[in-house]
Image 1 (cartoon, rainbow over the protein chains, first blue to last red):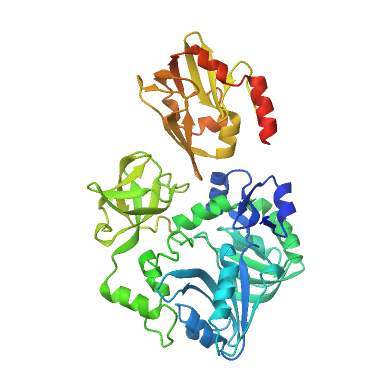
Image 2: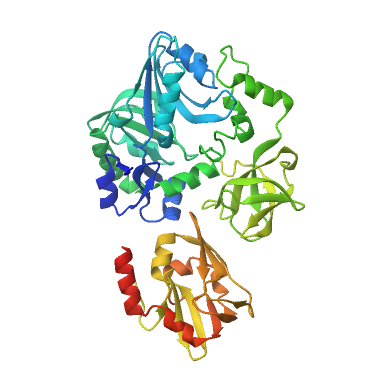
Length: 364
Length: 127
């Protein structure tokens, strides 16, 4: 299958983006350079094209009941204009996807899901709907989305709108915001560990928004930023990537995201029994952060050893652009996850020393 | 992509600059450009004898790790230690910043490599 182009494809080419096929989409992995872009987001601002993300609308009286059945977080506790992060599980506790839920009203919600999982998620959602009285629509192809991230995000966006952005709290949304003449929905959310906004509009409108934001942000030091630093930024901030820290095989409890799994909520959500059992029996493995002591960079799927015995594998690893250190996450035997514990990462068939540290590598 | 005349090249984008029985080995511009910001370099030890097409180094950018292969059989007589402290030198000038100096075991193996003209053609075809 040929990869698809987002509405911003031509802009990426004009800006010199290095285009790759990511999850079936032609997107820039970087423009100027990964490290420069990473630093722009940490210190000033970066603008990401995230139009590849999926959007699924839930409408109806029983929308909330069905969402609470599908998702691990407590959707019934949400209020209007709130956004929550949640996980969608299989009956065995493995993960279908992780996503954001936007509550517009008690009877209208928007789910934002990973690009690579749109078809799988939509099918899962339809297949499990049964008698719930809810209308579900996949509007992914109609929506353009950009993420403006970094400490200068609000200053930049405020130049383009009369809406008072300081009144929008973290994990909240506002609809019908005029950004440079384009009607948008915005939320104070992101995937970088920095303050910022995600801006949604129609596929046509997003090109104007992209260009206006870059123009307005010039004097603030904004850069267009690619997928490359999107991953290093989220990793430093301990945000999971589906297929790595959580997956069909790795439950959210093993991934370390119990906070988003409300085992005590009223609704019997899919996966609840399995996750309850896993929690009561005690985890046997868990994702832990580590820092290299010896020389080398840990990479995804490198094996982890302790005293010559295999205890797990690396889920994500990098030379952290912010910390200038080699760090990673590894899914390992629960008994080896204590802070300070020394482990070996197999790098090119050689064991290299590392030690367990908090996986919150970066805090703003 | 910059290609320096007078060097020999491999299809994996290593270069070798022959100086009598000895030679400098490094990575070509194409390799550093496709890797992106290089943040880590691993080098062999002096006196290591390494066969043609075997790995002598690993070069890693933020995103990826790449093995670097010997263009010919040889014995390592010097390594560029500067690269260990400042791997980004490979991005800045991959030809000036050689990786290892070797003693060539069999100079006839150079015939299997590409000249700069052939390598330029090879790059055009790859693109």
